[in-house]
Length: 171
Image (cartoon, rainbow, N blue to C red; front, side, top):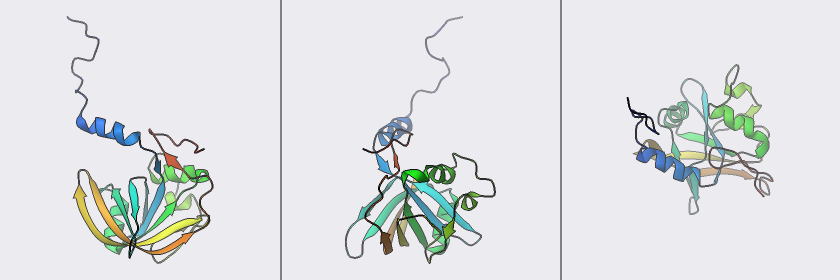
C-alpha cells in the first residue's frame, strides 16, 4: 500500500472549476428575475448580466436552462428584473435555493404583480423586460431582453453584490 499526499482516485481539477473560480473573482450586482409561467410564478437570483444601452435598451443574462424561471420566461416572454439591496440578502438566498422557503419563495416577502412578473413591494429599482432572443451558450441560456419599463430611484444605497461565493459589503 502506498500513501499519497492526494486522494489517488480524485478527479483532476476540471476546466469548469477554473472558470467558476475566475467568474467568482468578479464582483457582480445581484438581481432577482421573476416571471409568471403557465403554472405559477417563478424566480431566480441572477448575477451574470449586463445592460446594453441603445434604442431600445437591452438586458442580457445567463440563466440556468433547467430552472423554473427559464420555463416561465420562455412561456410568458416577459420578466421583472429587480436590483437587490443588501437588506434583501435572505430573499436572494431563497431564490438561489440556498435558504429554506416554507410555503414557497413568494411567501417569504411581499410582492406586487406587474405586467412582467412579481416585484418585491420594497424594491426601489426594477425593470420590466420582454424576451427578444435566447440561445444556449456553454451550460447556460443566454437571454437578450428588451427593456420596456424602468423604475429607478436615486440608486440602491447599499447594493447586494456577489464575490467569491459571498455577499460582501460595498464601500
